Length: 376
Image (cartoon, rainbow, N blue to C red; front, side, top):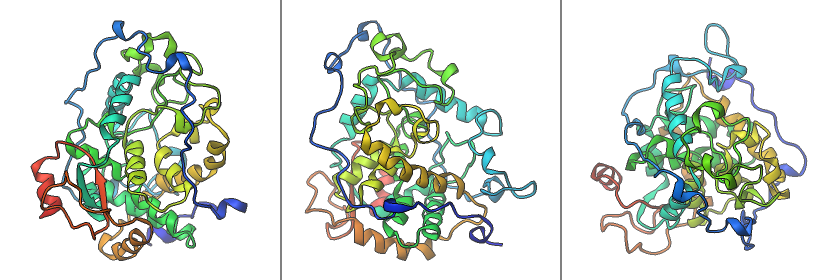
């Protein structure tokens, strides 16, 4: 029986949440960060240099999917596991890989590192590719922080999108979010270590809260743990400053959010929140960091939770056929993602023409093999 027939669709939202009104995610107001913390490098002189090890880089593979490793959301003894068994960080065949990913993440994700990555990737002007080209690259990416699956991320993108499409047939923008949400993982293809691309995100610059995965065993070598300013409840932030003003650990969420904003995707505020915070499990699932949230964050939280149902529970042995689904999602790209604006002076001469729906992404060292794949 097809997965779509066996699994139960997540519940719908009710009331005004069903009619989102497009609105900008961020305001023009300055960040609500404590004045003494702005440009502060307190304790930096005593902190060791941040290491960026190469041993734990994202595995890039060209493999088919092993359906035996794809768990079904409803689960049973023969075919898979129950919802309560998802995100099992205690044991399992992938646990060594998962723990090592989080150990490196929680050692190296610091205020200084996050600030540098935001600056490095903020411009989104050094490379262009179509959305479908970027999505196809996910065929070559396996998320090593995921304890549930061991197959390329492109399948997960279509599974998430199709799950949303079945439960919310009238919200095509929501379908597109399901397809787009993990495209930021293409950072793994330019040599970013896995801990700087995947996994649960968390705020830096304040005390690590209880629901952060492996909190008690992975932060001991993080330089920020020796800085008193970063280890209070609010840290460098003001109460209820709003998540838009919080430095989140760097990864694919924030990167794709920046790409979407830079390319002026015509999507509602809910869509940007889903992409930017879908990996922020300590918030939307753990209930932590509410002391940093403002009214907008709390208003968006039900939407992020709704998205999470599909992100987590649509992993299924009946793998989608991208060639059958692409025409529909290409139509949504045409509807919500504007054309590339003019020629990109820094793009290679063989870049796709501006008339194509193109993403402006950024990195100065895309491997030649990736360039050939994108522009051949």
